[in-house]
Length: 370
Image (tube, rainbow, N blue to C red; front, top):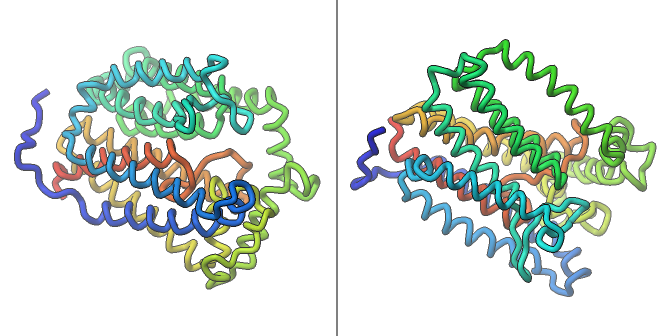
């Protein structure tokens, strides 16, 4: 494949860049607002989470601007190596003494105060490799043996390693993203039909094999059966959203962050945002994510080659699926999954990875015929 001439790169898509920075700014403000009570109580420093989020955001933005200026075909050249490194990290995280257990899952590798979540980086690594694989085998994607089966097998191998931690939420985002990439690359609908039947059976098995997942399902169906236990989080989330009304209670004036909603700066930050900024604030954030999806798809469709198109779509699908799952959990549409809200939730690996991925799309936008 001939490489693109990047000596005189055009400008990145400023609309997408503005959307990303706007979401990031909202996230930093909301992490400060939602976490200062808990941070003061736990660490005797009400800025503890806010300072760390600023650090994560700073590192992520630097990484995003660096990657934004790296020709996206670099990811194609090193896709195989990147995927191997991600698999090695997924194996290492399962080794006692190497992987750290948090929230009941062995999902972290850490040295001192520094830690990373390998499953987050696997999402980008697998997207890059699949974009290369699918673009090279475009004419074989209607074939089960030559196109569909190898791609799906690789996805479920990665999913299997993530489930050994276990981390069902990240695994669902990974599988959903990759399945959409395989679909838009030309895979046959009948192959997906068979896979869907197996997927439903496998999903039921995963839920039935872990008692805590069954409790999450029952808590979702009727959280008031156990309001102090498994139903507590979703009840408190709805108690945050309801009083927000149209305009919200005002920045910093949430009541649910006073030890009602556990660690509100992470998975349930959208609930505090809806409480303090109301329907209008929550809707504005949703609109920003919709614009992110629209602009990302536009960049993808105008990409100069199949690899760029699939790589960009993969990143956009990943972020969009994660947003849909997180917001659906917060408003009580689906059971709790432990998925963060991209650009907004507190977190190091997730935020950094999301910004790095955005940098890839921004670089592709330099070459898109917008």
